[in-house]
Image 1 (cartoon, rainbow, N blue to C red):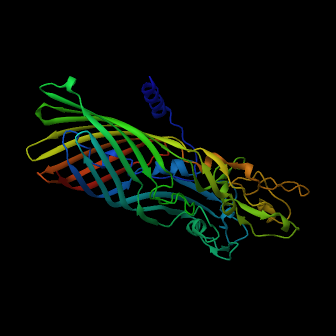
Image 2: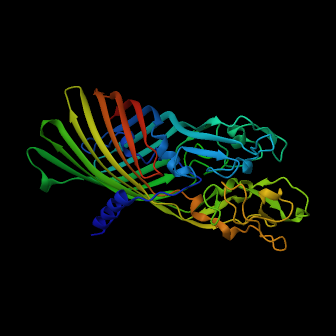
Length: 461
């Protein structure tokens, strides 16, 4: 009954997955992707040591920007008169003439490439087995900025950097977090997964044309990463900073004509962790992190230069534990000297939940753009406005932690379908071959990607 409820819940998510604007996005964990590694052969007692040079490339960039962009699209309009999606003056991007008419169209083109070496080893005794997986990978992420129009920027930021265009605006040194535009690379080990369990051949289910094996196992996932740093939007990540514990089962049928079928699944719970995340403000809506702030002690009727809000609304956050569920099936056909495997995996990862956020600095309010921040604040300003409503001069409004949109700093639920094929040459003491997969994301949080690999395996008695 419990398993039926889980399946029904996931099917509902598949149909009704809801997306939202977020400030963070990550690729699927490699170690927890079962189809990228060889399936344990419960019918033979041996030691397997497997190496896989592997490469993955994202596709469907519009899906990524549907999760990250303020209008859920890859293209946004900049208009200094408040007639577009973003008023670039909030990013110190302004025309050098008195008309204040900087206007352009910006297209964001995100891409992610991951490559490296996957490692997998297991030992299977008569009834017991131990399995270890990890990988050494290089993750490259970039959101390319293509701008049409503009051309008349050239004013200085609060650090005296001249901002000429959208690329300058989103990569400027005034932004300590949330930058966009340059390729970022991170190299490291993905999480380490250790499985340990017991397999059993069902004598009562024996037949002339079919043998049946059941395996149950526990698993531990050891973190190898530092968590998010929020320095760049769509930052590269390798590993996590979360321990995980779980369990799973496999059923294997070895049939006539050298066919075999494995159906299985696993569940893991990732424990709570602290990470650095950026937040929008609830009332000020999506991308309000790129607004400017004013030091309220300088409201003295003299013009001030604003301070990027993102440097204040990026804080450490405590995330509650979350669950990940995998279901998979692997159909294999053996030939005289080789094998062909077709496989499928449904992966569901629970949305993140934030329990606590460290307080933002006090004494700052949202910059009143029309008066150059010298008189009061504009607590209801949004990123597209040229003339936000100013607060009373006698009652400027301070930005406080409770105004943060907690959901904007959390990743939504992940749901994806992976299809893979594996072709191998089989010898007595080693195997080698090639393989590939396509991971089709469902909803805006999951990244769609393809991958390819070569396989080298040593078999020891």
